[in-house]
Image (cartoon, rainbow, N blue to C red; front, side, top):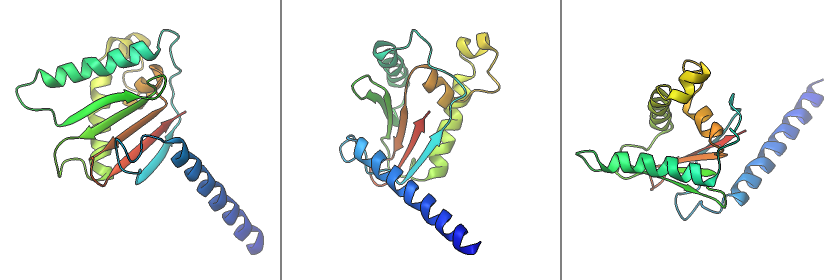
Length: 161
């Protein structure tokens, strides 16, 4: 029994290592826009991509957020952009040292983004404003990956499924 459990654990570790390597190999933006991810997680979205979402709508979404942050009275604390052949990868890069340097701060940013997303008409019309998260909004729009980084030595990546 212990031997079976040991081999089961080795099998799981082996599969997770292969999965991590395949994720790293597929991420051509690591090392250019952000350091290799320190943390990776998979989020099983409760939302399905809406039929009208495409490269153009994802870029418009990112452009809108960028314009809003540029219109504030203070300099933006992060840059947000979309990459990938279909603009399916959302990237958030912190622009100030010491602000976005832990997994907890990254999760706090995502919590703030969830609070903002829950005020959107699309969530209210669907009646999911108390259930869906920012990750679900990203999945609705057709994003498949969200990467958040301090641009120096911390990167957290969320794979949306």
